[in-house]
Image (cartoon, rainbow, N blue to C red; front, side, top):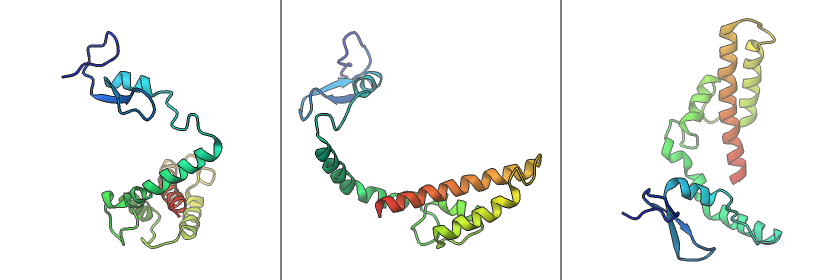
Length: 151
């Protein structure tokens, strides 16, 4: 078992960290010291704006397949294009799996207006239903934003 390379630390060193950018040599830190070492790490340090944009674009293109395949790990019903969380959110809004986002937004607004705390002040059940609708809408909205980003 290798010990942490931080002076005076007796914990196991099982987290590699580069000794210098683009160097194959590694420090071996414990988890706490690895977090400390990486806290101010800037992946784009020393690059000008054009180089940063080029590297960001390359990173996104290389990892796009992972984001696209994300729903396979959470298999739910439907055609496989929506996660299980999205399917539950659609159930809360009483919508079908293949519905478009404008329809989701319209259904959310209609349902939220009926149970909004301003419409039904002091009604605990209505407030709970409103919160449930809010969470469902946020899940679907963030999923839609991810799809647009991958676009």
